[in-house]
Image 1 (cartoon, one colour):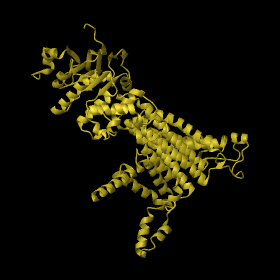
Image 2 (cartoon, each protein chain N blue to C red):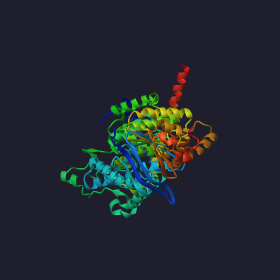
Image 3 (cartoon, rainbow over the protein chains, first blue to last red):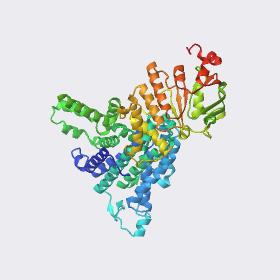
Image 4 (cartoon, rainbow over the protein chains, first blue to last red):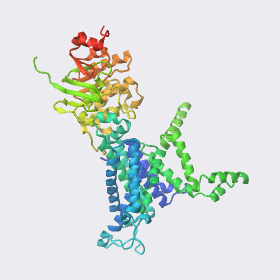
Length: 372
Length: 256
């Protein structure tokens, strides 16, 4: 059950090293603070799960943010009602989002192609408006679901556990260890490595082969004796559970859940991440998630002053021109840069950044051979 | 030698209307076990409709198709396959994005594990039995060297051979072939005939729909002639060849 091929084992080791060493290699990029690295790990989990559906079966869901939101709400409710320990919160987040995925997937998967995408989008928008207004008693609507000091927390009360930071609001713990800062990051990192491992297992399994068959030729699949419906539904539920885990982790690192997490722009974001990195590859979605999170958090923080400092060595006139042009692409304008990058990728590298890397390596290898 | 032949597939009183158009009327077709049964007829005679009724792609207006005691009418295509019927398409339907080896292995999983199995913690590469069988088949069909190539990159003839491998690994009781030589050159057609003769020794029942008389008379044990939605003649190839009705309806001067 835990078997991996030799190449997969090496990939997993390399991946684990890259993830765990984030605090080191992100330092020169100015992104090595726990809050951001947690997001890197969480959105990578989200993207890995999304890719199991989109990358393997080819079904493009435009509503996966719904499961992210469900995961967050569930985790916060677990904090409020049961305990501040993250273990039940994580488990419930995965289970409840899995149930949502089962229901939404059951109906959406009756259609394929654009109709499937529209159905998932419609369901996600319903979830969003339920969370935003209709179900206010459960979701606390616009304000977002918050922890309070008066929450029952049955298990904690029964055990008489003292909360970490008992003075203010309690914060999430894991077996008594506070999940904030670096401990929070390492929790997310370990779960990301686990998610990557599960994706590797699925990719290499007969189940994964069947999912790929569905993407490649649905007609051949049914005339070969596969019932494609449970296969696509299983992929949909698995990817929904990954999204729920990611949503739960968002609530662990910052115990608040709001409806904006279910917005369609969030659903679109995960599609962008997956395509940017490389659909259907193991590592692509992770890279896509990291690039987009980096842009969103670092690029958007660059302002004119920083640009002026960077281009200080240039003659005044030229410096002004460059800073004026460049400032349109950073800060508020980071979306513009991202959009250009996305257009470039889709037009020239439909296989995403992973394909770009492979082409580059092939070229290097080709040159090496010529020299010999 | 007077044992009654075992009937594998029986299409009983099948009618099919498309709106006002009668595509099939009063079809009664019996396929004997182990035989190669050809269905021939001019364009628009209803050959493809008949095949699609058998495979469950379209339901008959009335009548039933019975396979080995099971009524196929109303069953989904994957259920029909699970009963032991595999199909080769007019244009090869393969998994173009997968490797040749995986193309052959996937149908073997459908045979072993049924229509659905959540086998996400097994490893395809360690399914030695299925892998060995797939490699053996590919060797038989001269495609072993290409086992790691993308199936989409194969030539049309190779795609046809691959599709045959995909059907054969399922050990079907009945193999349906829809114009397996359509659009092929004479050379490729002959290669395909050799191929089909080769699998004849495997003893499975085959129904072959074909346009090309050369192919039909090289392969068939029994022939049914379809014209305007009816079976106008049925019998051994040598009888069909001289049947005046058949000559009139279809063969014309092509038998020479």
